[in-house]
Amino acid sequence: MAGGFPAVRPRRLRRTAALRRLVAQTSVRGTDLVLPLFVKEGIPEPVPVASMPGVVQHTRDSLRKAAAGAAEAGVGGLILFGIPAVKDGRGSAADDQNGIIQAALRDVAAEVGDDVVIMADLCLCEYTDHGHCGVLTPSGTVDNDATLERYGAIAAAQAAAGAHVVAPSGMMDGQVRAIRAALDGGGYTDRLGKSGISKLQAWVRNGGTIVAIKGASGFLRDKDVEISKLKPWEPPKKKDDDKTPAEERYNDYRIPGATFRTTMNDRSFLTFGVTRSPYVLIEGAREGALQPVAHRVDNIVTITKDNPLVSGVAWPESIDRIKGAVYMVSEPYGRGQVITFADEPHFRLFWRGTLPLFMNAVLYSPSFPRE
Image 1 (cartoon, one colour):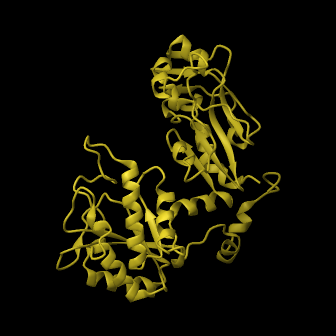
Image 2 (tube, rainbow, N blue to C red):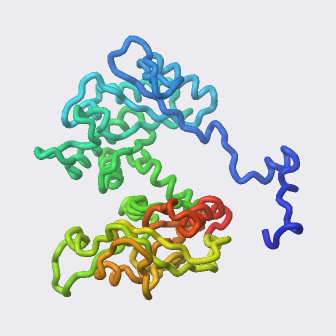
Image 3 (cartoon, rainbow, N blue to C red):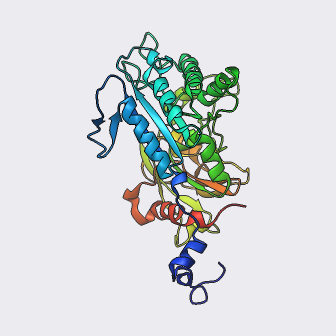
């Protein structure tokens, strides 16, 4: 809408239920919903989950009844979580064709067929005796690449048992690619493997907004997600042939805790009502700043190059190197956008900090899709 009050009166569109239905941007139907169902091996009757009133760990029989009831109610999808009776270090039950999750998938497929989308959680945490989402090395750390092989085997087993969609919930690098390759290699080219990632990409591309804070931007720029192209601030090399890993170079430019002056792009809707450039609190330059970028992004808040330090503790080298780094960016993705804060909004700075910008990002950004 152009203009403002009194010419613009949005209450006109909310006057009756019929008007509200006509102009509503969002409507929720049963077919939009996915019902989580938990099935446990070796129990004689459903077991209530104390932390989630009304939710139970099903037997195979009660699971079939719950699936049929959900289909009759018009629910769009079911996602199954299996709980095995026996666990081991590699989560063997996760891809066992006679394991609880595969048996449950066959039961539900026989009960509802293609009337409901059948999904299966794909992870190892519920199947390993140590509780991690992957297999471990002898030293006790998660072995990312060995876990990808397990994920591929689980995906193929779930597809064979009747899953229409496999839903990876682990955090392994390259997991979507490995799962897709396993599904295609097993002949399940029609099964969906990206689950929430593809939905997230489509949602943002069609006008959605993500507000990412600190480490969340790392997920968005992962090679399997690629919603963001931003790069974190990296400390410089001491010389051109310096091969010191970035992780070690960060130690030379740590910021124990300091407040910096910034410049602000006051042409953006994100700065509405913000009358002066905020101060930003940074604790560790690695996560507190972003590399300056120019690929159709709006740099909303940038650390000043002249006299940036307001207060706190920061080494002179750190101050020199962080000058001109970006703190807040609005980045397009299709018709949508990703608004990234390099560090937490730090509410302790109140109205002289980035709290107003954060509130603008949350409240106003859905009304300003990128074209």
